Image (cartoon, rainbow, N blue to C red; front, top):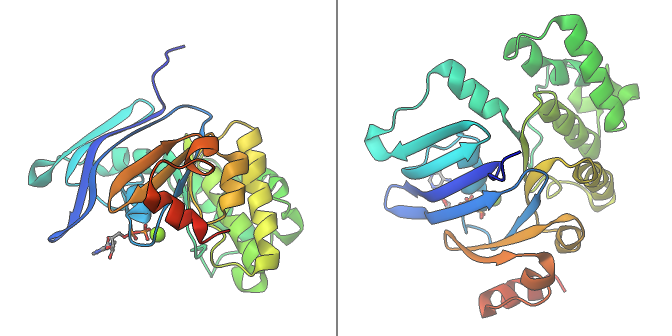
Length: 253
Ligand code: ADP
Ligand code: MG
């Protein structure tokens, strides 16, 4: 077994016009590690996740996920062909704040869709796997429900099952509980906690500081497009080095 990190982000830059949103981000995530990303609104957290998932194309730098590496150099970037791009995307499962389920599909169909269309998994197999994943997130009894008949917490658990169905190497969560009523947050955090116990590699953007302290191996504090602090929760959350981190965390006390 090599000791190479599962995810390596090197000198990543992303700008929207004149607005430089990610400035030289370098970051490594090991297999099985849970990384929580915290920081003020607008600091670049979502953009970083979107770059790892290639929903956003960086201007410079390099991203490796497992065996796949893509280098970015502005207009000269050669993105992989569509097949490779789909494969790269599939290796990073993304869960958004607003679920983004397909409204015209049942929970089961939502979970089966990626495997059937992208991975070309035979339907019967995709359905069996989707049912197992719905069971895992506690929603097997909702398999035939459409999203508009599900609560926010249930929708988000379907979204997690749907991302897992692609058998990603890493799961990326962008404020997965921010849009939920407070009483529904726990059921989603419990699913994420279960994944952490199973050794799933995850990067989670969250404002649930207590949760980050509990599940994260490493915490990133993002500020103005840079990794301002990085380390275990016992340092970054409990004994931050910078005033800006302390000020930010003070809001959650
Ligand atoms: P966070 O998730 O930490 O709140 P974001 O990554 O969403 O921060 O945003 C960082 C900065 O990038 C903000 O200034 C935001 O306005 C800008 N930004 C994000 N996405 C886009 C986009 N698609 N087009 C232009 N600017 C964007
Ligand atoms: Mg965001």
